[in-house]
Amino acid sequence: MKSMNLPRLAFLFLLVTGAALTRLLPHPMNFTAIGAIALLGGACVTSSRVGLAMTLTALAISDLFLGMYVLLPVVYASFGISFLLGRWLRTKRTIPRTALATLAGTIQFFLITNFACWLQFYPHTWEGLISCFTLALPFFQNALLGDALFVTVLFTSLSLVERSVPALREESRMATTLS
Image (cartoon, rainbow, N blue to C red):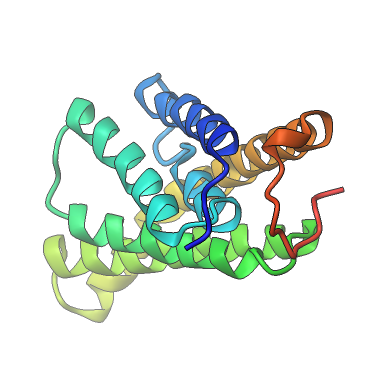
């Protein structure tokens, strides 16, 4: 097994911690960094286990402060899918692919969590489904804007630090950097 770049992992941990803390600050609903953290964990952490653990730990710790909720397993699973989208970015991390993964992550989160919300809280009718998704549209807009902003901040921060601090570069990286 290949050894991990501990300085890089420490920097990623600090980046993720800072981003996760934004979830505890006042913000519009669904305008958080968790989707971006999931993509970053998938794309930039060599070990899948460590990257996924980093993602879910950031979510879990903030949930301890914010409270638990009935759809928690669905939300965690959806961020797991976003993590897998980040793994797809590992082979070739470019701006268009990162934008596509960000959009795909936001859309799948919206569809999966709102379908679960419909199953849990709405009448199981066509009208109930339409009502659920219609009422959720403002949350989708916030999630999309938040994901776009935080992906930009996290990936750009990492790219800038990698360029200026060679010890933080991923040695076996096959992908191109954001430029």
